[in-house]
Length: 315
Length: 257
Image (cartoon, helix red, strand yellow):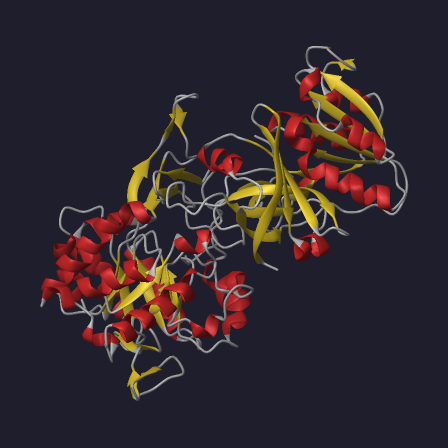
C-alpha cells in the first residue's frame, strides 16, 4: 500500500506505513498518552491527520478529578508529573471528545486505566462498540494513582490477567503499555504476549521524586511522580532492545524522544512505531519534525521501507 | 502567529533579578489581549527543558513590539536574562484568557510586586478606552515599587503601599484597597495576597478577577499540569487549567487552600 507520506528516491517509493497489531498507521509517529490531551489541543499547531496514530489521554470508567497540585516539576533534562489520570470518564469521552476527532484521517487509540481487573474489562467492552476507536492501549503502568495502575504492570501474572480481561471483551487491537519500574520488563512482556496482547508500548514514566531544599518538603502534591523527557531515553531504548529480542510483538517505543535521531534509535532497537511525549510541551510541532527527520534519514541512507530499520541494530 | 521567532530589541535589568525584555513581534502585538501570556523557550537546551510562561507586560501596536517583565527565579529565567539585543526567542502564544475589559465605571487594579506584569498591559488598554483606574501598587519596599511613573503617565491614579512604610501606605496593598473599594477590581500578585483579595471581593460582593500562576507544562491545555482548584457547585470543586481556562479567573471561582 502507498500513502501521501511516501517519498520518492531515485524513482522508487519510500514506504513509511507500519502495522501495529492490526492498527494500520500511515507512518510510525504517534503521541504518548497524557502528553497530547485528546488531540484538538494541538490542532492549531499541526495537521493531526498527518500523524500515524493518535493516542489520547488515559480514560477511566468514572470521571477523575486528578491529584493535588503541584503536579509538575522540572528535573535535570526531564520532568516529573503526578497528574493522577484527570479525565472525564469513558462516557464523557465518548460523548464529548471522540466526536471532535471524526474529521481527522487517523487511527485513534484510547488509553484505558482501571482500579480493578474488572474495570479494564468494562472499559474494553464499552469501547468495543464505539466507532472511531481503532484500538486500545492498556495502561498498567501509571505511577500516579493509588489503586491499580502500576501494581498491575509490576506483577507479570496480574499484567496477564488484565490483558486477558481486555482481550475477552473486545475485538479491537490491544496494546499493553509496560512499566519500567520492574525487575524484568521482559518477564512482564512475555506474560502479556501469552495472554494475547496484539502489541506493546514502552516505556511509561519512571517513578521518581524531588524535594524542595528550602521548604524541606516534597515538591509534588502527590509526593512521587513519573519521570519523562530526555533523562529517561537510555532506559527506554534498553527496554525496547531487551523486549524485541524475546517477544515477537510490534512495539511502540517511547521515552524522551525529542529529535528524529532519538526516534531512529528506538526503531533500530526494535520499535515499529514511536510515540512523542514530553517533547510536545517544548515544541508543539515535535511530532511533525520527527516525522520529517525520519524521512530525511531514510532518503540519505537509501532505506526504502521503514520496516527494514526495525530492530536493525540486532542484526 | 502561534509559534514565533521574535528578535530581542532591548533587555534591561531594572533591579537585581527583575528584567524588562522588549521584542519585535508584530503579529503578537496585534492580537494579544491583556492578561494573556507567552510560553517562552528561554534557550535551545534539553536542560532546562520546558518553556517558561511569562505574561505579556506591555504592547506597542504601532511599533509592533511587546514587552515582558519577569523575575529570575530559576535556571530558565536565568538563561532568559542572559539573552541580548539581536538574539531570537521562540515564543508560543499569545495563550490563555484575558481580563474582562470594563465598558465604564470605576475600576481598581491591585498589584503585588511582580504582579504588575500583566496588569500594566491591562492599564494601557483601559487608558486607550479613556477609563482611568485606581491602581494599588504594593511592594516590600519603595525601590521595588515598579512602574509608578509609567502608570501615572497613562492617566491612572497610583496608591502605593509598602510593607516597611518607606513610601505610601504602611501595610499591605490589599488592606489599602479595602479602605478605597470600587465595584470592579483586577488583581495579580503572590498567592497569599490574592487569597486575601478574593476574600474582600466576596465579602463586599464586588466584581473581581485575578491572574494566577502555576507550574506549567504544555501551555495549550493538553497535559493538565497547571491545575487550579475551582468551585463547581455547592461544596464540590474541580481542577481547571491555568494555561487555557485562565490564567485570569473570576475571583469567586478560585478555591484557596
